[in-house]
Image 1 (cartoon, rainbow, N blue to C red):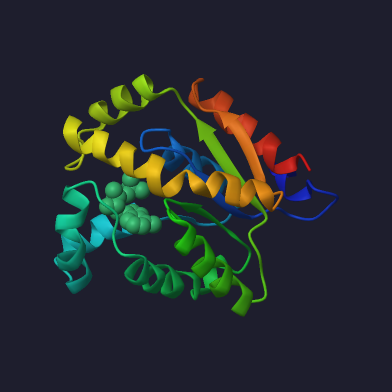
Image 2 (cartoon, helix red, strand yellow; image 1 turned 60 degrees about the vertical axis):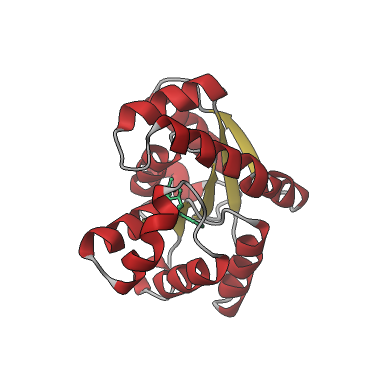
Length: 197
Ligand code: AMP
């Protein structure tokens, strides 16, 4: 998989957004892609869960919102992501998992990246049937994985996050991959999608 950095006419494609419903496997795939591309996977959900576990001020602010399956406010997420993207380890690229989740966040992200003189190079959408999404999420056993919360997160995804699909398709950045396949097959398809112009 060392050839990934060579795709797209010799230019590396390493500023990537993973898009997909809760349970689509984007967290798992973000980690695989990050390893292949030698860039960090940045999961905002994971960052927030760590903040809650650490009992930080951020954690206290987001805990109830997360438990309800709702979205943390765009402004607060913008601060979290801006400070993460200031770190040195993202210079060569990053895989964003769970951000942006609203068109407002996508615009904020554009601004953050523009200040650094870079852009998103590809948006990978994982498609998985709804019944499978619920089955997977129920199997994860996370605090926000009770069935009613899962259904709420799916509803929020459809309402707030799905508009990002056309947002990025219109910019020519979207690649769609069937996420209802074995993990390694999906990873291979994602890597191929990073090479497809
Ligand atoms: P995830 O691990 O991506 O499923 O995120 C878990 C929870 O963290 C979500 O249900 C939201 O409550 C919160 N969260 C994570 N990322 C974001 C984001 N970009 N915007 C708003 N809330 C977020």
